[in-house]
Amino acid sequence: MPPWPSATIINAGEALVGQHKDIGAVVLECTNMTPYARALADHLLLPVYSIYTFVTWFQAGLAPRDFGPPGSGPREWRER
Image (cartoon, rainbow, N blue to C red; front, side, top):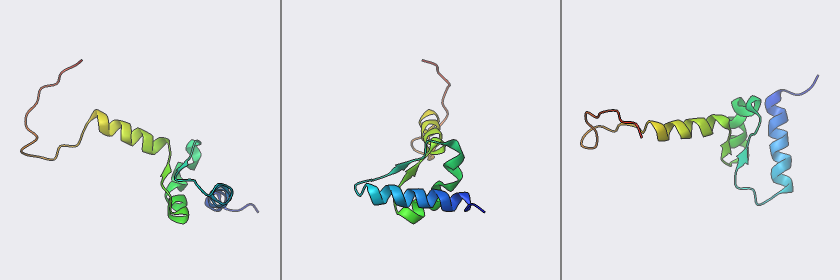
């Protein structure tokens, strides 16, 4: 029986970091790996980025968080 997907991804992460000691972050290019990003980050003690982190970062730029007064208030929608 093959190992659980999370074990396979963690083993691959260990091998990657073992071969390249100067890695500062990991990018998961496969969308199927996104659910394992947190386990991999916790295990490797490195930031792990995926399509999900990219989309949430991009969306945050489109609709910045409203922190309340004094910086917020009524605003009109405008298109550029």
